[in-house]
Image 1 (tube, rainbow, N blue to C red):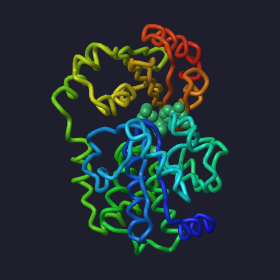
Image 2 (spheres, helix red, strand yellow; image 1 turned 45 degrees about the vertical axis):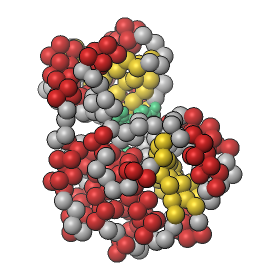
Image 3 (cartoon, helix red, strand yellow; image 1 turned 180 degrees about the vertical axis):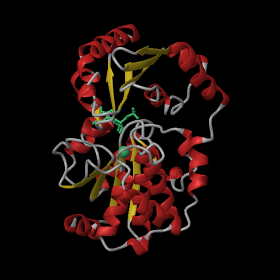
Length: 332
Ligand code: 5GP
Ligand code: MN
C-alpha cells in the first residue's frame, strides 16, 4: 500500500486500464481512480480494450476514455509515455486482449487493483482482495488506507457506487458485506443519488432489449431439473433480429439462476469469433472452476465467463455434457 502511494505521488503520466467488454465495475472503478488522481493534479488516461454498454454513458469522464481497438496509435503513445500503469478489475493480461501483449513489454511500474481469484504475476504491486465484492470498493478502500477519504467527491462517489451496485447485483450477492453497506452509506452522505444511479443503469432498456429478454426466456430457456442447471443460447441471427447492442444480454443469465433449485446457469451467445459463455451459480457450486476447466475462462466462484472458437451447436453439446458430468455435485 505504501509502495502504491509513493508510486502515485511520483507519477506524472498515469494510465488506467481495465478488461475487455468493460462492465459497470470496470468503468466505475477506472473513472473513480481517474477523478481521484485528477483532483490531486495527476494526469491520467483511462484505456479500455473495446466498447462498453451505453447504460454506463452517463458517468462523468466517459468521453475522456480511449479505446484500444479503434485508437491503437494514440493508446500506444499514451502507454509508452506512462510512468505508472494501473490494471483494474482483471487478474491476467489475457483479459485485456491484444492490449496485454503491448503492456507486457513495457518497462514501467504496474499496479493491480482487483478482486478476481488467482492473480497472475505480471505487475509490481498488488492491491487484491478476492473476497471483496468489487474493484470499485477496493478503490474506496485504497483511498481510505491512504487516509484520504476527505478527498472523495460526489463524482468519485457515483463511479464507486455504480461499480459496487453492478458487481453485487444491487447489493444482493454473498460478497455484499456490512463494510459494503457502510461504504454505500458514506457515498450517500457525499451526495450520491443511489436511486438515480440505479435508474440510469437498469431502467434504460430499449424496446428491442426487453423483447430479446422475453424471447430468450420464453423460447430459448432450457431447464435440466434433475441436474439443477439451466441455460439459454442465442445465435448471431437471433441477436441481430433484436438489433443487439453491447450490454443487451447483461443480467439474462441471472434469470436462469432465479428458478427454484437451479444451482448453475449458463448463457451462450454466438459471436464472430466463436461462442461467449457466462456462468452463474449458488449454494457452494463454483463456476469459476467450470469456466476454467472447460471453457477457456475463469472469474469469481459464483460468476464467471469463458469463450471457445466453436459453433453454437457444439457449445450447447459441450454445456450439456459438462452439466451431466457434474450432476452429482449439483445435487449435493
Ligand atoms: P460476465 O458473465 O458478466 O461476462 O462475467 C462474469 C465474471 O467473470 C466477471 O467478473 C468477469 O470479469 C469474469 N470473467 C469473465 N471471463 C473471464 C475469464 O476468462 N477469466 C477470468 N479470470 N474472469 C473472467
Ligand atoms: Mn469486478
